[in-house]
Image 1: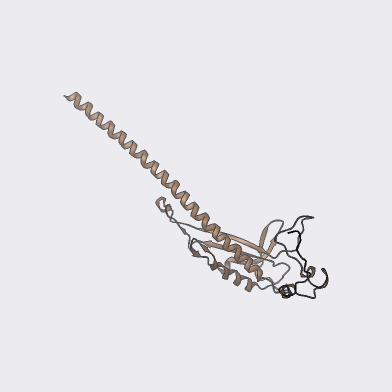
Image 2: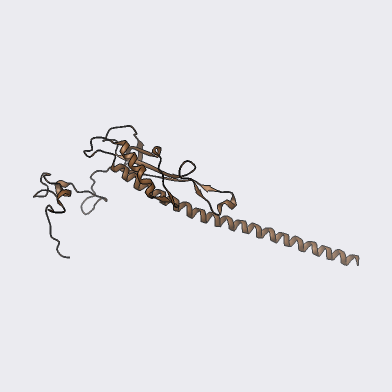
Length: 222
């Protein structure tokens, strides 16, 4: 009787330990799966927010550089460039939040094509140097709010800051040799205005294109 009771107790104790070990492994596996699910979910949301912030930065920098120089390209209008860039921000959303751009996140300056680097020249009035606008867009504690997590909170991550930037440049005529065109490209009005291509700029193409197209050339061959 005593021996059988001891064996039965030992068997019950061993079974309880095995069940406890299995429960521990299942718990660890569930935590690992939850961590992977949180990582995948939040990574997707962060990349979506970053892509949308990048689009806002691209558009705002292009808008800003369009207002950077006066019409005759002889002066810098830093205020107009900054205001235009800022105004373009809310036209875009990052995860349904309109993108607000701070004045301090807009810089004017120069762009080094070789080094591919931007040098802020805020306050400079030299149109030969100030030809670029840099715009930073963000979702963090300072502006627009960080991206709130969904599953990340289960592993202690409540929010994730995201930021990006873009630089737009007033370019210049380029060249890639015969059969190659740099994109985007522009055509000087002198090449398409007047009675003869290449003549003096006596006509404004934009003013006459709707009613009197300079140098019309009929299409042929389909």
